[in-house]
Image (cartoon, rainbow, N blue to C red):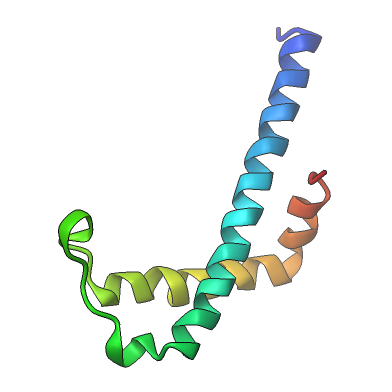
Length: 87
């Protein structure tokens, strides 16, 4: 059986991770705006140096496809679940 202290630590950790997730989600939404504004569909170069092996297509998959999927979940009520835990 967990102690009250352990349970409170658990709640704190879930809240902290929810905050990080929310910030990451908001960043990805803004990355979509930059994608469009900079026309990265046609002119984003593949990664070099530390980004070697990362293609523009891979970035598009995260910035557009994955973010759109997360937005679908958020719009179905999960945004309220997350934001109810934020400071």
